[in-house]
Amino acid sequence: MNFIISADTDIGTTKSTNQDSLTVKLLRTNQGRMAFAVLCDGMGGLDKGEVASASVLRAFDKWVRESLPSLCNLPLEDHVIRSEWEKIIQEQNELLHRYGARVGVSLGTTVVAMLVTETRIFILNVGDSRAYMLGGTIEQLTKDQTFIAREIELGNMTPEQAAQDPRRNVLLQCVGASDEVYPEMFFGDTRQGVIYLLCTDGFRHEITAEEIYAGLSPNVLFDEYSMKQGLRRLIDLNKQRQERDNISALLIRTF
Image (tube, rainbow, N blue to C red; front, side, top):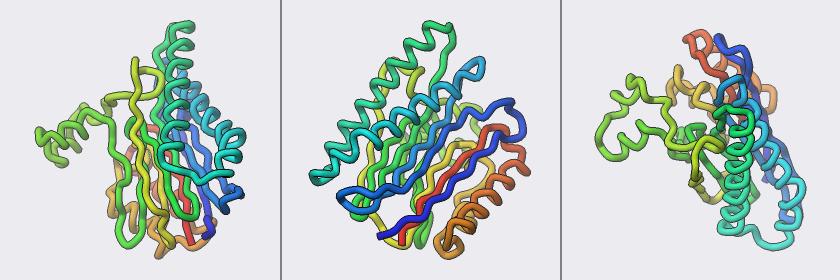
């Protein structure tokens, strides 16, 4: 199996800094080709959200460089990745807590991380950045850790009500600003001929899932250029609709 990757980020129409951090890369390992991606949406006073998102991204990037090669000498099992990634989250949460206390600022970040091997996909999520799979349809792979997502799951709110609720951006947890962080993990078999999308909430608030699918489905994205163009068109559409947040997304296409 092969992979094509692409990514884009935009400061948006309102904010003075881009507090999102993202990376996507192709890997060659003892177990074949892999694609790895991390996307973080930072938040905090005095622009410290940028510090939080960059710190978490660097921690995962270090894991890819220093730990993954040795792990690939044995079969990559779900429980191994879960243990490794949960450790990163706990360490980063404590690190950012201490930093925030030292400088007198509350800061934190969402994180969605994905490792795609030739046979298996591993996803970690904290907060409300998302992972999708686009094949014959668009499928959300992660669950938002937000107040409104919990209310919808409990049957206290409809999706239509949630879309208009002023609390739609209230997170139940994020790395750095929560006393305890409980990341959610998702596992599955890698699909060929699909596109995996990671995005911040700024990428999806002002456009629909149908618009995302129409712009980024594997039927219209065939190479790195078309993937880059597809992301930019949807980012610009968000800005035209007055999205106020930073806007970031990345793609992994399997073939």
